[in-house]
Image (cartoon, rainbow, N blue to C red; front, top):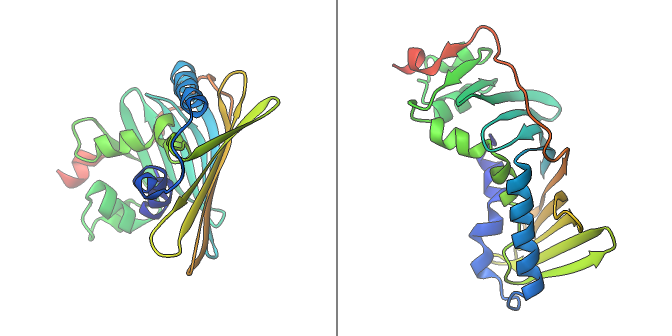
Length: 231
């Protein structure tokens, strides 16, 4: 799960595609994107390190995710801010931010500070579950770095292939993204998004590894159910 600012930056890949004035997509790029989607679906899981830099703040998400399991840690300026696990259809979350517990889980402002050091379980019947579950999948982690076919160029550099997309945003803001994949397997290995404008530069990068390796997080101790807090 990522903070809203990180999500906004990652989501630019889809939200701003229509603003691009670049040329139409090529059959080669479309074919490569189809191969990437197929490879990700077949492998199901991967490990990753996702880094976002905005001004003096650095946020890093380290972990692994698949369609039904996840083990992720968010560090803000090298301090652990969030742990989140997805095990057998249940999400376990420990967040040091009371405002995040209030905004994401719906815990009252009065109660939220009490649970900043507590593992909280979120089940499928809880209101926040759908958003949390969707945000902790491998597809969610990859989608911001995966370009649309329109306006994307492809360069085969031996064992790797690089997809590059440049987009004009509002005003003087511009966005450039690069996704590098293994040519033979179509598995992504790294990606970077850079947004530049009058207010400065923001960047977001990711590395992927261990495609297809099982994820086996364990249920933490001392768990409190979300329903017992907000119910």
